[in-house]
Image 1 (cartoon, helix red, strand yellow):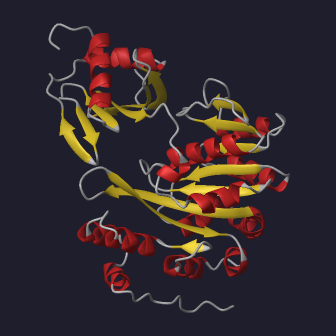
Image 2 (tube, rainbow, N blue to C red; image 1 turned 135 degrees about the horizontal axis):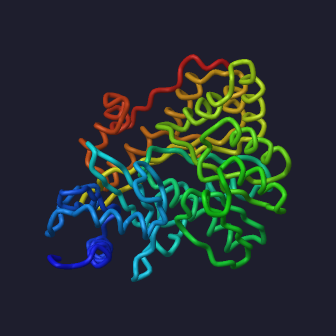
Image 3 (cartoon, rainbow, N blue to C red; image 1 turned 180 degrees about the horizontal axis):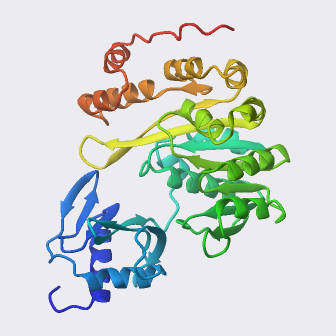
Length: 362
């Protein structure tokens, strides 16, 4: 791409990401661009990037010049949408462009417990939490669930996102999509205002502070279906994450509200699949029966144990999911062991021996 303008280089890199099926473009000043394909980080056959390239990225993403950290989005000339994070590293600029698939995938195609999610989403009010680390596919799962609702029911869906990753065409639902920084000033403000916009379903891109958590719980209590993502490693940690946004003297009330309003929690991670690509591994629990009581009574360790040992529509842990994927040949046993918090227990599960959850007083 020698002699090409910064704009031409950006378009060429975006096209290369699409052509090779990359999930991400990793770009740093004076370094060769790399792409992540099926979990692997691969260099592109092109020259190191010059400073003016990052001027173009900022311009196209609508980011103020010289910003050291920011999230935004851009669309290539070919119509491919990317989520953009600009950064500074050792005084030099960089950016990571995450490719956003234009077509929302079918819920049944993702490898998540689709019928469990549909059951939760059939409720007219309550809270659904979708957790996982960055890059685990949370946004895709939520988008697929919203599109599933779009095909099944007449509802007004309001989304508050940063940035908007998928756009929806109205089918049976009416969508109002709002981007933080463009359509509203913050997640908390967008969520607060959404309650006056006659929503049936609200998607909050992330619960990240006390104000957004408070309003999310209020939305669930006042007859709305609230779907939100949280950055956690396990489904049980989602409860601690929400509680932890509040001062200690308010947490008992928060736990009781969560126990009453929570429909369920899904947590997921992506692992390298046998033969290439990625496979999703999920754990989940529905807030019913003993699980609801454990939430209300602040028995987090026991909740973790029950979910971890579960293998049913009500609760199913990562251990069970890993074992199932290994047995099906979709996941290498060593990869599963490295991803497991208890490799010895995984070996027992692969032999068909599951430990029961101990110490749970019913």
